[in-house]
Amino acid sequence: MLEMTMTMAGILPDFMTPEGTVLAWSIFVFFALLAVLWKFAFGPIMHALEEREHKIQHDIDAAANKLKEATAKMAEYEKKLNTARDEAAKIIADGKRDVDALTAEEKTKAKAEIDAEKERAKREINLAKDAAVAELRDRVVSLTGDIAAKVIRREINHDDHRAFIATALNDIGANKN
Image 1 (cartoon, rainbow, N blue to C red):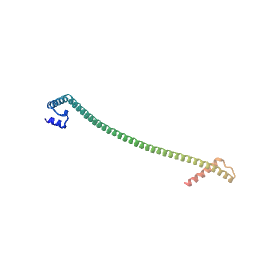
Image 2 (cartoon, rainbow, N blue to C red; image 1 turned 180 degrees about the vertical axis):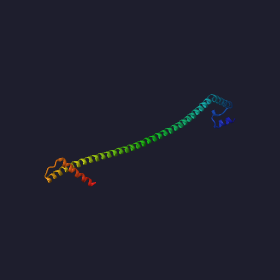
Image 3 (cartoon, rainbow, N blue to C red; image 1 turned 90 degrees about the horizontal axis):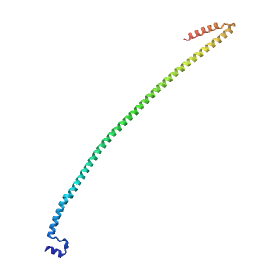
Image 4 (tube, one colour; image 1 turned 90 degrees about the vertical axis):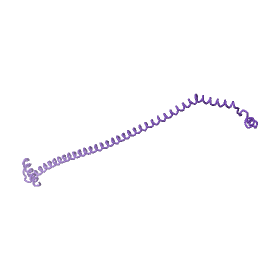
């Protein structure tokens, strides 16, 4: 009766009017289909979703572990890099120290060579001076002998003349000292 009044009133179309048996069977089919889907469709879908969730969690954990490993390796590489920098700085410092030592050694060698050259030059100068003095002494002896011969007007033999001059020069040298 209510059904007829709704249909007659035009509120619900004919196919929308529920009949008791159709409604009961529809509910039964719905729950039966729900049970079958639950057993054969939703179970595997839920199982697949759980597996996917576990796989994603496993991938996240693996990524976190790899991040930790990468961080540890990076710290290790930074430590090695710092060690290498320290070694390089030490090598450079050693090189500078070696250069300074070599420079000092070369300066010492150069100073020694200069001092040796000075001493050699002094010896050569003294030898040249002594040779010049000896030559001058011989000339003085010769000139003095010539002058004495002219003064005395006689010829003195050469050996007597030299002995006389040498004695005179020795006396002059002794008076200077």
